[in-house]
Structures are given as structure tokens and as C-alpha cells.
Length: 578
Image (spheres, one colour):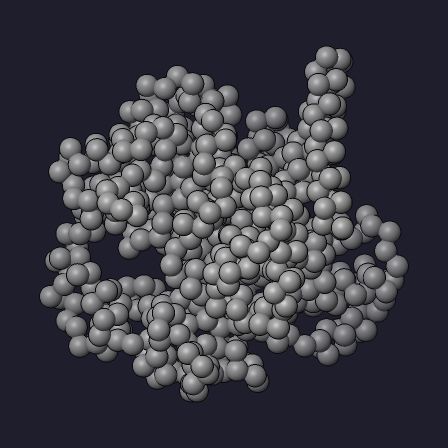
């Protein structure tokens, strides 16, 4: 038995949390005031039955190890030591066993990566796709990109031939156990991007679908979290970017693997990416070891804007300086670099302080004074609040006064009288505007995960079976994510499922059953519309290029595609307003 499981067997989460928080029974759970915020009304809950805690005021949740990490502000190893001592377990008696197991897991992942690399070298089509995206063969080799065959048990059989046990292979997330018996590969027909720890050891993978885009499954699939892989503490490219950050005096933060690969290949070796999560406190801690400046180059769509806001808040809380790299509409860093290295150089050079970037965007809008004032106080003041330096705070307030055309004294007075209930949460009018007034947002989840959990919530309540337009909901989901909704639900880990279903139970406790079909339908349709908007932006860029090049035939074809997207969008818009 693993040490973590042994500790969980000996310690009840209720006993652990109760030593820090005064709790009272509330049905099947226990509640108390959050230890993470200065709240007046209790919003902190513990579920002994399912072994998790959740804090509504800070949106933090997890198991006993997560709780100790948060409350004691320590890493996982120290949390393990604290709980082991409390459980009366001498870690020395388990260190050899766990150490051997960890080494075995590293070996399995390394062998798997070598196997995927062999398949990539043999597949000319995949290599051409990667080089067509701008990657050199040296970059492909350096980052150990690979390919998983479209077979159900390829990596499983290979690792079995290497004498690894089913349990060990499953522990690193490479295979999934079937309902009946046996296993099948997690990654099939996918380009494989190994994920590395700070020492350059492989701890997991990201697989991008390749070939038949209609294949079941999401476009990107990550390894599940394990003893080696914790997405809140992994930055793609970090193992090669560390020293470059110190030399450059900043860290460029992007969203995807291709963005990192193109940037580092071009000479911006100080580039890293967040994968499958927002910027966390642990991410910032990793970056801060080498620099105190972050240049954000996240997508300019609505999801990218929200991710930028969350990342800025997290960085500001740790005293980091944040700038934004503005890119052409519809283009990400990889597209920008591939289009023109010189253009990317200019974008990086012209990176603006986050507040300046936001004020520039607001300045281009036709806003009345009252609208400007509301945006400043409700949208930008929280960022000033998270800025640790009083000097920097005052400098920002002066910029806001200039933007509003009022005295600095009046802005200082407004800021001094503003209230900020939680240090870890920003929920402003602009956030609600960006998310299209989506009331279903669950903090820390992707839009797809939010939809899946909402659908699962309704399914467990028995509501889905009563949906009159169930087939349309399923079809729109499949069009958006190229996978079936019931299949994707199985990829959500148990802890996330338990916590978020608990959150949704609380959020919708007063919502009539008849409203849930509309809620689910609207959430899925709005995400499809956002997907269509992104496709349209990309098409418009191609149309502009075709017009410049005088490509009449291609222009006609692209315009037809644009019209098709517009018709689908209008049809979807009608469906959520009827």
C-alpha cells in the first residue's frame, strides 16, 4: 500500500481539519468559517464520507494533503511528513518502498516516451504535420515528441513486454481499466508531448488528436494527476527555460505546447506554458526563483481574457510585475511567430503593463464617464488591491485618475473606501461580461469541464432523462469538442467530481427542475458559438490574406465557409432565445 493511502486509512479528514477550524454538523457534511479568508458567514465545508473539503469563499478544495499544504503553506512532501507524524507512521520504514516505486514510474514513462518517439519517426505524415507547423527536427528531438498509434493496446503490450506490471503501468496513467476486465491505452492516434519536471524527467504526457478529427475523445488529453504529475506545479518547457528566465529578466507565459516550442526554437527560451489549469501560486513560486516579471501572451478570445485576469491576480499577490503581449486578433504566439519572427519580436518588445493594456482597450471604446468610472472601480481596483507595493499602487491610481480626467485625490478616496471581501477571488462586472453572463462557471475548470459536470449533475438527479432536446444537446457538444459527452465524463477524476457536484448542489438548491434543460442547453450552445467565433476569426485572417494576394478562387471558397459558419451561429443563437 502506498504511504499516502496508509495515512488516509489512519486519519479522518474531519479530525485533521477540526484541529484548525471549528466545525458544526450540517446534514452529511460539516461547516465552519474559512481559514483562508476573513469571512463572517461560514462557507467552508468538510465531507467525511467522501474525504474532501471545499471553501466557497476562496474556491479551494481537496483531500487532507491539499488542506495541510494550504493551511501550513508547505509543499506536498512537507504535508506528507506532517500527516505521517500525526498518524504515527515512521516514513523511514516506507521511504525505500516508495522510492523504488517512484523510480519504477519514471522508468515506465521514459520507456513509453521512447516507444512513442519510434512511432513518430516511422510516420512521415505526422512529421510533415509538425514541420508544417514550423517545428524543426532538432526541436522535435529535443522535446521528445512522439506518436501513439490508433490501436487499443499498443503501449500496454509494449510495456508488458518490458516486464512492467499492470498496476505500475496504470499508476502513471498510460492505460485505463475497462468496466469488465483488462486494460486499453489512454492515448490513441495522438501526437505525444512529454511533460517534464524541473529536473527534466518525464512525469506525464499530453496527447493531441491526429488523423481522423471525428475520433471519439477531446482534442487534447492529459495524463491524470499522479504521485509524479501535479498540473498545479507543472509548467511546460520550464526545465529548459529556468536559466533563460534569469538571463532575460522575465518569463514569457503562453497557453499551448506549440507556443512554447516555436518560441524556444526562435530564441525565446524563457517561454513556458500552463497546461490544463490556470496560473497557480506554485507556478508563480517556480517562476519567481529566477525573475519577478511575467509577460503574458494568452489567447485574445474570451477564455484567454479570463485566463489573463486570473493569472494577473495570482501574480500580483506574489509581488510580481505583469506585462501583456498583445497579438493580432485570432492569432496565438505560434501563429504569430510562424507568420513573422520580426512581428513577434515587436509584440514582445511592445509588451505593456497590465493596467496600461486594460486602459488602452477601454480608451478605444465609446464609454460615458459613468461607465468608465464603474469599470475602474469594479474591474481595476481589485488589481490595485493585490499590488503589494504602496508606491506602485499610487502610480497606478495616478494613471486611473488621468484616464478618468479627475484628480488623484478623488481616486485615492474611492480606492480607500472600496471593499475587497476575499484575497483570492475577483468577480467583477467585466468578468461577467466576458463570460456572456454564464452563471454556471466553476472556478479553476475549463469550459468543457464545467459543461460535463453540469450535465453529470443533471444526470445523477434524473433530469437528463426528461430533456426534450437531449439529442441536440449531445450533437452540439460533439460538434464543439469532437467527442461524446458521456465518454468524456469518465475522464474527470473522482476528487474533482465529488467536490464540484457538491458545489453545484449548493448553487442550484433553489432552482426548479424545469430550468435545468435550458441551463445545460445554453451552456453548450454558447460554447459552440464561441468556438464558431474563433473559427470565423481565423477565416477572416485568411480572407484578408487572400484578398491581398488576389487569390480569387480561394477567396470564394473561404467566403463560402464563412457563410456556413454564420448560418450555424445564427441558428444556434435562435435556439437559445426561443
